[in-house]
Image (cartoon, rainbow, N blue to C red):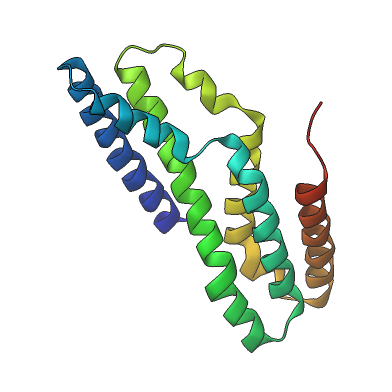
Length: 161
């Protein structure tokens, strides 16, 4: 948990500094300041987390059902990179929006209330509890069913209300 929080904060701060630099360049009249902000804005949005959650749930489903060596391989090369990607993308979004708020856009923080950020939180919670889910056969079975349902839901449900 400590490693997750420190990585999140570091990426959010670095992104915030880059956005602040881009705003400073834009204020000085340089056109490429706006380009930097647009690139950081376009890097990630809330809809990015739905397919990432499907990838993570599929890899976690495999971790819960495979034997220990194969599960370790999938965990190290599947779930951990997807988890890290989701963490970095969410930290980037938070850093951009906090910088926008600091530079006068009072509505910037409302972007963080998008319901699709639940998928990013789900990836983090699932990753932090994945080791516990492999402890006994009942938890493995329930986790397998839950991750299978999450994979299919994230891939094939539109989430339009």
